[in-house]
Image (cartoon, rainbow over all chains, first blue to last red; front, side, top):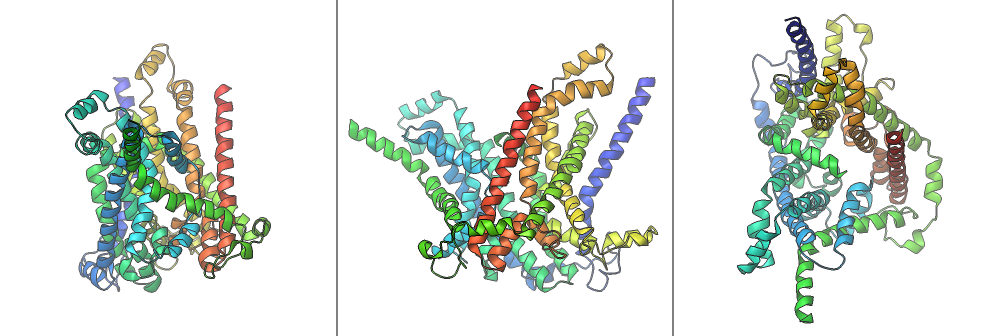
Length: 278
Length: 297
């Protein structure tokens, strides 16, 4: 009995601590959403979390006048194309590293591993120089290729470890049935690797959606910019228009939160794997 | 026969070709370029000619005397120190709290990892609005609580700006440490605790003699990744303070960006990148050596 009471109080205290930490995590998000529903007049005076007369028109104004509709579609386009590119290219390479034989295989693989471990701060400087040289500055394809490259090492590593665990017998059976190497990759390796691909898709989607610095250096044309860049531009021009800024930020953040809530299991698995790689 | 083998090898190369091609163009070439550029003086516009622009080690010599650069380094070190202590301690305490079979553990886990998935731009701009000197929520609350003597323009005050940024960095990062600590804690076999309890060990003794020793590899991993990640923070700074007031929240990467975009000194920017990368490598190397030493002790 005494033990039970003690345990009850202990758990209660722990819950208080956990709830306090949770509130600190959630509070700025609620403040952002709440502020996005205030008008330009009330935002500086109304300190309530959620305003009594929510101004939904802010979202419309941000989407059209603020340009966030355009930025949103750009972000969506970059995220989908980059992630698609990463999945195809990294799975092809990982399949070869795991299953095929060719000279220099290990050297090439360790090169990718090394890229994950050597910190290269300011790599955007030479990258910018290169992009200018290749006339890829201010082009969608330039940004997409850059971002695919960013995601490759981690994805190749993750998929290779996955393919390594795949039973060889399955592959042999497929080969006897006359399946080509490309066929084995497409019909066997890819479907079997679905859990690993899920982790890759989610991680890279978050990464591309949240990317800021390359988008800043590569794009000077507004109509090509993704959301993160658009937010900073909007903040720079309309420095006091906080309700529209908050609406734009809500537009930027809600898809991420939704994806996160749906896929959180895969995400948490991915972090643990990511840490082990490092 | 030989012909067929050559053909298969060639086919196999085709699988890695796209990856290798992209990687060579967008990683290896810039990697090499950083080293050549760091020995040159170049504005990024004129035609680049290595022989003509070559200035030897002059960029590095200037960098060693660049006071703003070293204070940026110190400021990044300060943020890292706060992240190492405050952020990781918080993450560990929360992980310990969730490791016991507590109701709603999964909900807490989902909430704590929310800040890490948000973009640094969004996080920075929301907190900038909360910290705002005139209309910010923080000052409003301080007035309400009768603490008006504490009210200040948080991000424009040289005394508070850096700490404010550091706190937000911790806010964004602790969920990540939490997940890793929790994963580590869950690998500790429960029987160890049971056995020690039967022998009459107190909770503190359990923590000190079972949890801590078994968690050392995880502590090392988290501390290395925290240092590498925090030293290179910069988007959060751009969106919160832009490096100001003055140079009080500048960090190395914002200085690199400034050399490149602000003053068009590409060579100097590259030398900054190399020096900083070398420092990071050295720090993680020391950490690994130190942890090996600690493991033996």
